[in-house]
Length: 121
Length: 107
Image (tube, rainbow over all chains, first blue to last red; front, side):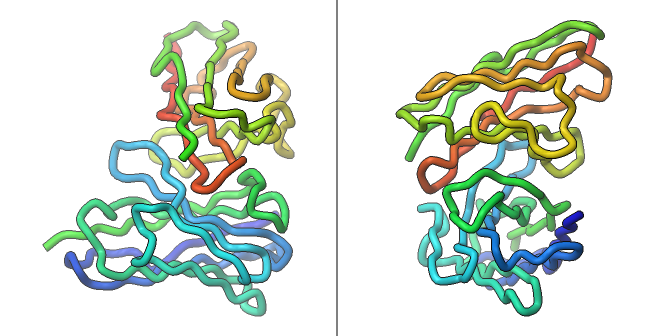
């Protein structure tokens, strides 16, 4: 059974950078597209970035395009999200999500427990 | 972006009841529709994909239907552990977008 564990969250000032990561265990993610989804405090879910199974293609929500970068290391079974030029509105729990297939137009299968990123001066 | 709406925004029902949640997409997404359950303070959990297929381990009390722009999630024999917020999500186009959620409470 796949387990996804996020790490790297914390408090960061506006304009600074932060990198969050997701470590998978119990299953190889190398054949699966992966997704980052976030949830602002008391709000709903928002898709942030998606990456193909081999890392060759990525896509981003308009709200983070040009500031965030998703990447993966299949040899280490990990997923990352580099967040630059952070804004207060980026404050959220960030969830790592494994999709059901290699193609990114596929549904979510497994979710991590999330890591909280707080952007505040 | 594809916009997703849900109704009702919240509902309260009794143990043993059957409840239905509706989700509508702003354009045709065929059956690229998933349902996700989130209990308070917990991470989301995937329930249904392809509008009507159950994720592994999900009990058949959850049933999904629909295609195109209109979808429903039905929960049968409602139990206290079903108290949660339910989101629909389209994955037919990026960014994947979620509905605003339906909060299900037990009377």
